[in-house]
Image (cartoon, rainbow, N blue to C red; front, side, top):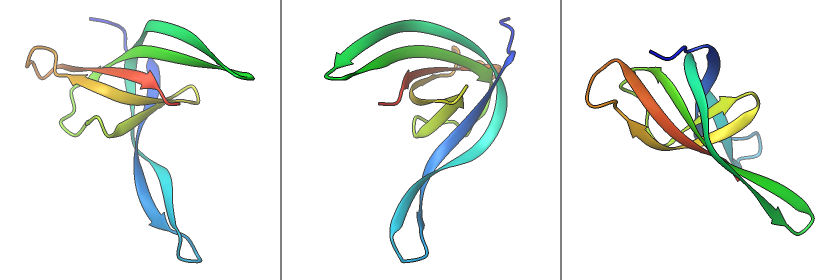
Length: 103
């Protein structure tokens, strides 16, 4: 068993209407959970003036039935898109969330 000692926030994008009637896309927190975190790979991409980092990471959390690839994880101020949810061989103990940093 891996130590789940990192606190992450699971969020989802929702559309709301502002005071003048425009649709606004907002990131809304769903829950905060403890997770095991591991960086799988990283790559720096040089684009013109700036440098972007593409990271692939793994979060392992306790089993939840409501996690989908439409959710976003916020960890240490960085947003990660969930690319795959692995149900850990069908056992309802843990979920492995494979993620990439948002661009």
